[in-house]
Image (cartoon, rainbow, N blue to C red; front, side, top):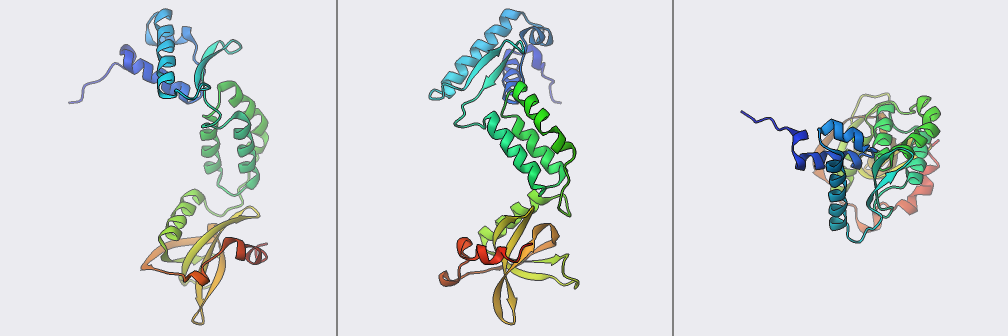
Length: 246
């Protein structure tokens, strides 16, 4: 039988919980923490001091990664190095680009933006939420399914491993499986596309498939090889292929 652990009564766990919450971008108030963990204000202050020492030890060359006090919010927060973590400006720009792309499902956009906001402080998080709220509330996805991130990742694995795949394509009236050699993924005009070699009259031709129209992807169980002279070059074919994308 597993023993229950009193997280709040254990100093080690208390430090971990405080650090974890600051890592998520929370601003922590000493009075609130004192009541929550049933310890004195001096104890909470020592916790912050010990966490500062810990940060100096694990980030000796990142002087910007420190615990700071915000007078306006009356709390402590973790300020991260802008070299290794996204800045508030970067989080804002990436959020606006994601919302403007309309290329992911609403649940995927929500998850991504929530994760991005963990890189910044509570105050900056609220500021960004205020800026993007209208676009976020009115967000309309231009895709036909809600699993774009998962689909794109799996396709990149097939591309890397040079695996021949088959799938059904919504734009084709027939119900047959298309057998292709996937070579690249492009983004254009609100949509992600798979670029793949298909066999047409015993000749390989590059074709474009909108990823959210691809269904029932299966592995054929064979790998493919493209001779160097025929290798797909993103720069060489991009202009020609993009002409066919409306």
